[in-house]
Length: 188
Image (tube, rainbow, N blue to C red; front, side):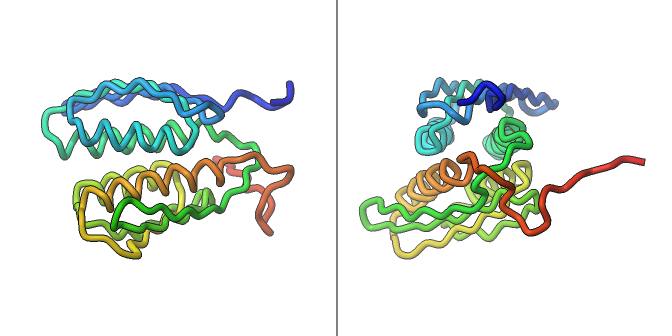
């Protein structure tokens, strides 16, 4: 990384009456993680996303019920990825296809700052996770289940494919990948 390029890291905390989530993220890492979440499957999916995206992640999360915990973990993680990306140009668009036993899943992302989500998943809770994550990341995310019967395999293949697609899309680019150039926001 050049001396001019800032470290692509973020620390984000979210606290509500229902949940407390703390995230420390470095997107130019090696995929190491330390995740403390009481829901084992949620922990496994968050670790999978970190590993396959090549992001170093520390996370602690607690919540009253599974739905609130899943949603707030996704929101906080999406915000952390967004903040870590900053304004430096990135490749922006990427796709990955991942097999897991009988399941085959494709995920395509566009880090465009125009959130849109089309999710195919057999698990409503993890569909909600991906929707919340993408909205806070302000990304377009499409998932397609090409085949599969086991819901666990489909969800896990989706998180692996999302991680791989993010890793590629977040890679640095020498120029802004848009015909609009970069967007400048102004407040009144």
